[in-house]
Length: 80
Picture 1 (cartoon, one colour):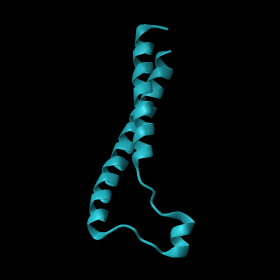
Picture 2 (picture 1 turned 90 degrees about the vertical axis):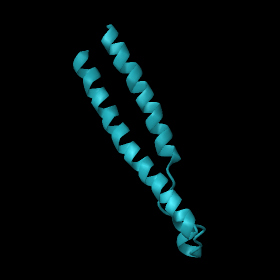
Picture 3 (picture 1 turned 180 degrees about the vertical axis):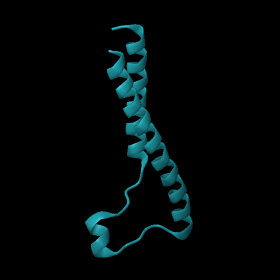
């Protein structure tokens, strides 16, 4: 492997780990079947605003890190 491939592979590995962490930090969009049956909404008015801004930031980060991951994958494929 040449040096350029190693550098891009390390960058892709960092991007991959960061992408996994960002996706796991996001909250679920619905509470699933138990929320549909019981109808419990544990979020308050003020809690919703905080989670929305954090979720929006995490969603935006997921989009850009995913694009970077795909771009790095294409670059590694072209460099080899």
